[in-house]
Length: 84
Image (cartoon, rainbow, N blue to C red; front, top):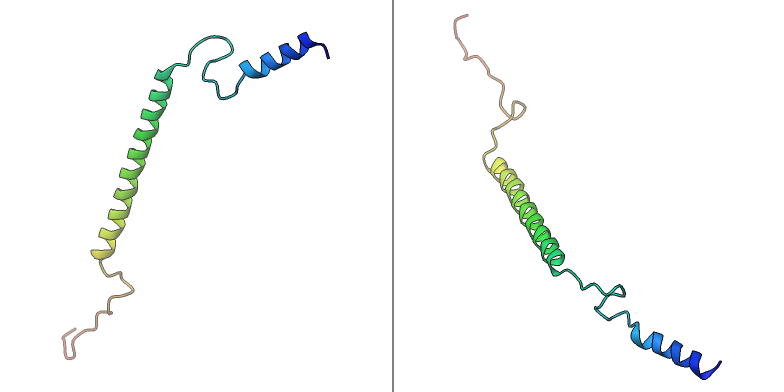
C-alpha cells in the first residue's frame, strides 16, 4: 500500500466517527423533531396513566359497593299461616 492510500484511509476513519453529531450531508440535526417526539411520548404516558387509574378505581368501587346477586340471596319463603 502506498503512503498516499494509507493517508486517505487513515483520514477517512478519523473523520467519520460514528459518534460525531454532524451528518455526512452537512445538514444539522433538527432539535424541534426531538422535542416534539418527547412531548408526544409524555402526553401518551399521561393519558395511559389516567385511564389505568380510572379503571382500577372503578373496579375497587364496584367491589366495595357490590349488590348481592340473585344466587346469594335467600329464596322468599311464605310466612306460616299466611292466607292464600
